[in-house]
Amino acid sequence: MVARLRGEVAGPVLVPGDEGFAEELAGFNTAVTHSPAVAVGITSEADAAAVVRAAADAGLPIRMLATGHGTPAVTDGVLVTTSRLTGVTVDPDQKVAHIAAGSRWAEVIAAAGQHGLAPIIGASDAVGCIGYTLGGGLGPLARTYGVSSDWARGFRVVTGTGEVVTANADEHPDLFWALRGGKGGLGLVTSMDFALVELTTLYGGSVFFDAPDIARVFMTWASWTKTLPETANSSVVILRLPPLEFIPEPLRGKTVLNVRFAFVGDPAEGESLFRPIRDAGTSIIDSVGEMPATDIALIHNDPKNPTAAWDQGLLLRDIDAGFASAFLEVVGPDQQVPLVAVEIRHLGGAAHRDVPEGSAVGGRGGAYSLVMIGVPDPALFETVLPAAAGGVLDRLSEWVSPETTVNFAAAFSLPGSYEAAWPADTFARLAEVRASYDPKKLFPYGPA
Image (cartoon, rainbow, N blue to C red):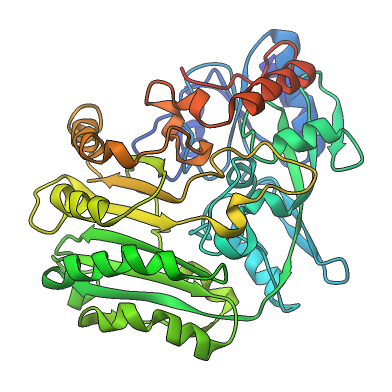
C-alpha cells in the first residue's frame, strides 16, 4: 500500500523510521505521540480520495490530524495530515468563505475582515477550522450568533466508499446534517463553505482581578449573567499563573480572576452592561472596550504555541449562589489544586436554538460550560489531574448537566461521555448516517 500511495499522492507518505515521520505528526498537544502505520500529508482533494481508496483496499482505518488540539494518540492505520491543504477565499457578495481542510481560523478572520465580514469562531484563532466546526463549536459570540456549525453551508467529503461528494442543504442533506455537530466517523472533509456576518467592531476584551477580589467578583458575575441580553457574551476563569517572564508582570505568579466580555451593539450600551463587573473589584488589567472584530481572539488570548495539555470539560444545567460558593470552596484562591485554569462560559441565547433544518449539535440545553485545564506536566496526566478534577466535580455534581457537547468531551475519557454528547435520537440517527457513508467503518470514531 505504501508504494501505491507514493505513486498516487503528491504529498509525503511516511512510515515509522522515515526521516520527518515524527515532525509530520507533531500537533499542538506535545503530550500526544502518534505512531500510525502510515502518515500521509495530503495536498489536494485528489490526494485525499487516493488515500481513502488505498486504505479501504488494504483494510486499514483512517484518522485525520490538522492542528492536533484535540486529537487523541493514533497507534494504527493511516493518519492523514492536512497542514498542506490550506487556503481561504471569500465571496463578499454571498458572504461566504471557502475554507480548505488544513486552514486555521486566523486565516479566515483576516480574509473576511478585508470585506467588513467576520466568521463565528471559537475562543482561539489558532485552532483548525474543520475539526472544531464538525463538533459544533461554542465561541465568544455563541449567545448572539449560535454555535459555529450553524454557519456551515456545505462540505466536500471523501466518504468511506472513496466517493467524493458535496454535502449541503440540497445534496446529501443527511450527511450535511451529521457533519454539523456529529464530529467524526463520517469521512474525510477536504473543505467547507462557511457563512460570514457583517461585523467590523464589538465592545469586548477582558479584565483581571487579584486574589482578594476573586470571591466578590465571581459572585457578582454569577448573578450578573442572569440579566444579560443575547447580544452580551461572557466567561470567567480562575488562573493560577507561574512566575515566568512571558506572563505580564502585574499577573506573574498570581492567582487571578479573568472576566471576558463580548457585546455586539452600541459601545455605550456595552459599557453600561459591563459596569457591574468593573464596580465589583479593583482591576489589575482592564482591556475591555471597543475593538476591531478581527481582534476577537484577544478576548480569551489562548496559547498559540504547542504545549503539553490536559483538560476536562462539561456542561452545567444552571448556576446559582450555592454553586458560586461551592465553586470557590474547591477551586478558589485559597485552594491548592493542580489546575492552571478553571473556566465557566455563559451559554444560552442563540446557542440554545437549532438551525431551522436541524443539525446534529449536542448540548444545546447547557446553560453554562465548565472546563478545567491541568498543570502542563505529563507526569500528572494519568492520575493526579483526573483525581483533582474528580474532586471538583464531586462537589459540583448537583449542577452538572447529564448532557455534554462533543468538543468538550476530551476524547470520551469519562465513562458515558460518548453517549452524553448528543440527545438519544440524535445519537441513533448519527449511527445510521455513519453506517450509510462509511459501511466498512474505515473512519473509526468513539471511545477507545
